Image (cartoon, rainbow, N blue to C red):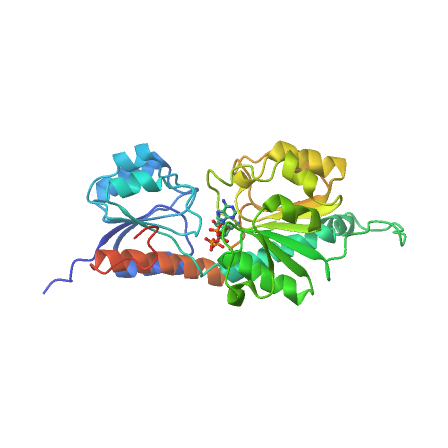
Length: 326
Ligand code: NAP
């Protein structure tokens, strides 16, 4: 008796060992190894060569219409290890009958923890203080020097109040903050938890000493934070973006940070990644990170396992757990 046939899988991204170990144990898996994630051409070639039925990817692999068209028809499911799916042409995937899944829910806490860390760090100048210490300190800092912005008790506006936005709101409430939010739809009271909904973003912004972005990158949200909306914030506001760089007009953001309209910003995501706009690296009032909001051991494992669960479910003939459409 031979072993039962295991479903054929390509893992196109560099993932934690716990995830690739499970992929190898449960699938006939071609697991990418190398310095970087597979390119589009490498992924197409690997799926063809391995006759893969499943593809596990992250958001460094853009599944645009041309790439989807080049993937063989044997491929039945593509699972992205992310909740965001702006790197996937969903209309093209759907048209060719490919099932696509993401990993909602398992990364909410870690992404919100990270967003709140960026908020605190930006407001309280954490990286500037760290720089002073690494340079040896050895100088007087007066009571009026290097002051930050108080966080506790202030008003925060959330652009997007989905899974991660609501996790951010829970953290803000722990700091006695007043929570406002803008989304297209108002949430039921049980999910609002006392937060105030604004149908119109522009009406919310003048009240927001802090603004944190938690909406997906779509045509509608492209550059939703621009010179006009930034000007509506109170002078000296703090912006946090751990959502997607596409939400922000980066020239306008740069101007707001250098003019004092924004006191500071915490940025995890950029319009161009990894080749982000280096002007931001020269600004002391910005704390930067390389699109890494969900990156804890526990959460990255959970994301990988969730993606594998989705692929296994589809290839076993059960429906996907987290389909992008139904
Ligand atoms: P979600 O549960 O789908 O929530 C999205 C929220 O955005 C909802 O409140 C939605 O409400 C709102 N929204 C959507 N389109 C909008 C629009 N045009 N105008 C205003 N609000 C809009 O998503 P999530 O799981 O919280 O994730 C949010 C995003 O975070 C993801 O899409 C991803 O890009 C990003 N993310 C980043 C990282 C990182 O590492 N930096 C990690 C995880 C996630 P309505 O539909 O009512 O408008």
